[in-house]
Amino acid sequence: MEHFRRMIRSEPLPRIARSPLGALMLLVLLPLGGAAARAEQVEVRLRLPVRARIDLMDRRTVTVTPFLVLSQEGSSSVERRGVDVEKEFDRYMRRLIRRNTRLKILESGPVDYPTFDLEDLAQDAEFWSYLGERTQADLIVSGSLDFDVQDRSGYRTEEYISPFDGRTYYRQVLVEDTGYEFDIVMQVYDGRTGELLYADNFKDFRQFEAERADPLAGMFENLYALEDRIAGIFTQKWVEARRVLFND
Image (cartoon, rainbow, N blue to C red; front, side):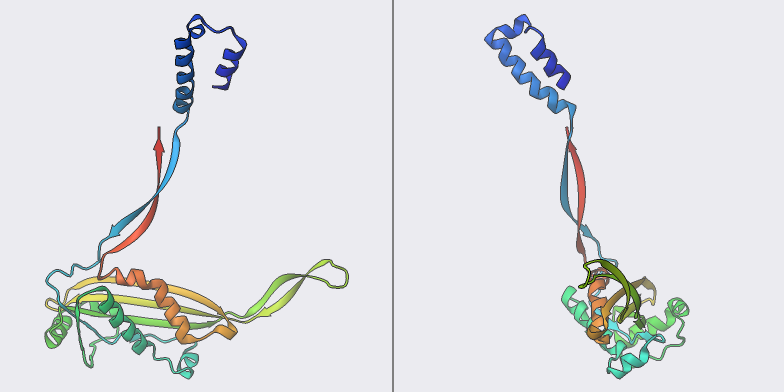
């Protein structure tokens, strides 16, 4: 294109360009030639619906059974702070279901599991249909919880400027951090047939400085990070996506 412009400047104008109408046509054609030579790139944001994992049609009630709590790393720290992981998670699930669905939550009462192996439980449709009949729940939410408190303290290298000579040096400093990891296995059963409708594994890790470390706060930081995914089991969610369009 630049070569074309230079050629126009250096060469005598053709006869068509010497007339007013011809000069106007030439000026119109030049920008069109530049537009055709390049395509514009436009980025747009779209809100896309993500369907709920479970169809709630004709389902009105749900019960949340006691989740199985696996052995915890740092469990003494959790117990010392008076944190009941299963109870806190049960409250959280009830709030989440009430906020995102119209399901009525029914009490499950004590549940005597025939086994503590989740894979075996998933195959025991007879047990879940019995529990559904006993509670009169259309859906049964169950699973396991593994909440770990991890000591992440250690020495790290940092640079500092000496106040004496103004030079930069490196030194090893002790940093005391605590990590919180929540591993949740979620299962949802049909209360009438005992069929496993949905199963997934949700994991999240958060790390805090020692003075800010608190097991209950760490656990809810994990849950807030996973909330959209967990809520997506029962309700449609919207996600933002970016797409690039080429306009030629």
